[in-house]
Image 1 (cartoon, rainbow, N blue to C red):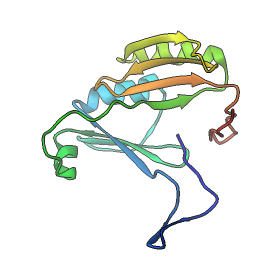
Image 2: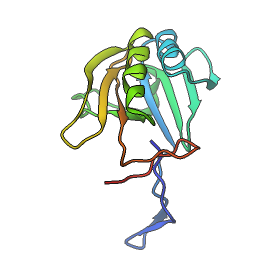
Image 3: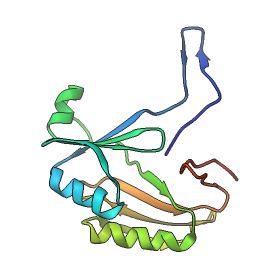
Length: 156
């Protein structure tokens, strides 16, 4: 989940922007259900929480879950078509861990979207939606090493 680069890039001389994501915030319906999924399923510990938002310190970014309509109001987002599909990814260090994590997330209130299997490009993955429908890919990819800090490196 961590995006890193070796320095700033120039965008046509207008600004220099580091290639990184600092915060991902997901809209949720219930703080209780969200906490059960992320704390009970992944085993993560919030660094901040109140009655409408939870923040988790990740390896290089923050993940927030915010009760709607608070997030929509903060964005001043007009009603319209649903956003395009997306998946958040959580890579594990061993193939067997994929099924263990998928089962734990389902037990914590997630919905199984895809049983763990081997995609055509290799590795092993399964998909689970959190209680608000946000898709998570749980994946093992032998070409993408994970260091001791939990950072994934792209590989082919």
